[in-house]
Amino acid sequence: MSTRPVPPVFVGLLDDAAVFPPGNAPLADAVAAHREHRAAWHAPMVGPLLVPPEDAAAVPEDLAIGVVGQLDAVTRLLKSGRPVRQIEVPVAKRGEDPQPGLRELIALTAKTNLQTYAETPLTWGVMTALDTLAEARAAGLPVAPKFRTGGLAAELFPTPGELAAVICACRDRGLPFKLTAGLHGALRRTDPETGFVHHGFLNVLAAAVAAADGAQPADVTKVLASSDAVPIVTAVHARIDRERPLWIGFGSCGIAEPLADLRVLGLLPRTEEA
Image (cartoon, rainbow, N blue to C red; front, side):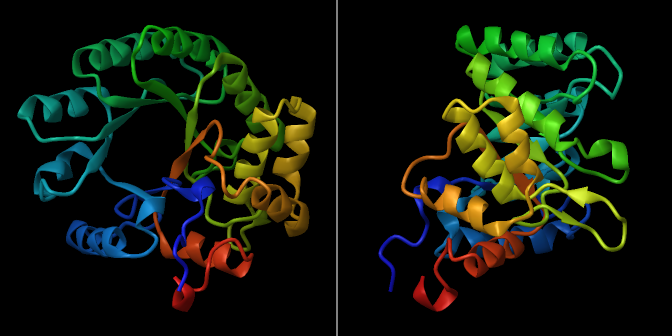
């Protein structure tokens, strides 16, 4: 039996987003499954259960939750007194100026001091938004950006170059970042049903390691664009006993699938060894 089945580089990698698409698990089922994760050998890998504001009151208060939703709904929930570990709020739609939404969200964070993720579109205004978030963090507020890496339309999947640019921009500003959507497998792949090319979560981890070590955007792009498992696994394995740099983690609608991928790639012990 392994005495430490979860390597440090994977601790806290997966927030439990079972109730969100494409999983769409009923809340009761998601709560039951989350309790199982919390009691399992892989518990250190799993963050809070993520729920929309309207479901938060139905989750037992002994479970840590993160709330994902619009600012007004999140604000109402916080006023109700239900304990929350973190909040995740979109600050703008694609093509909109993120600054007004950011200012409102940062003001809420200043009142609550809750860990806050500002979901910022990877479009016009993103670099200025990162400057604003960096200023807020420098002032002591627990805020960080969150980016979408997939969805129901092709334009919601950033190219490797776009994602590399924002990863390096976060590095340059001392900003950790979170991701959501589309990271359904360890390695970059094409979905046979939709034709969408998905980023691999292991590619993102290797890219974050490369960026933290000073790689330029072009080199980080190559890491994100690769579908060759060998260099990606090698890069992650070299860092396996150290904390994950830059990348906070991502919301996953399933916990079993990423665990299975990491076992197949030799980065986690098989179940019987855990």
